[in-house]
Image 1: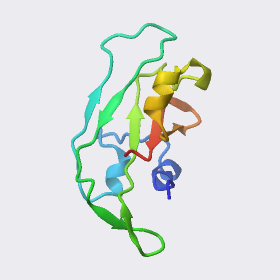
Image 2 (image 1 turned 135 degrees about the horizontal axis):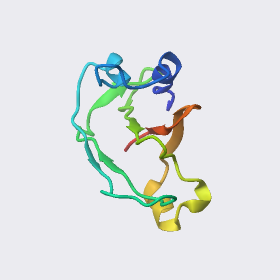
Image 3 (image 1 turned 90 degrees about the vertical axis):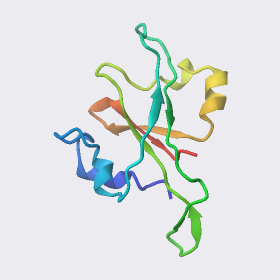
Length: 122
């Protein structure tokens, strides 16, 4: 199921705690470093690519809802600077759509368009 990030969204209006910790840490036992690549400067109304890499062993399995083993549920909460938001579909090039593949993007909260939930991450 792709609903695992919904727990955080329902419980917290803002995904960043006062300590700076992301609320997803409340549901996970492990911490993972991430790498993110974004442009250094962006002009208004410009579509850009953010590449997030989460190094983990893709051979690891979890027990799924029906009792079988399956791939880990991995998702991302991406907090962009205020004023940034997900580009409308008609602004995304065919090349970028191909790169995106089956990733699902949604706003973390209706009032926070600069915070995105992205899943499932391959």
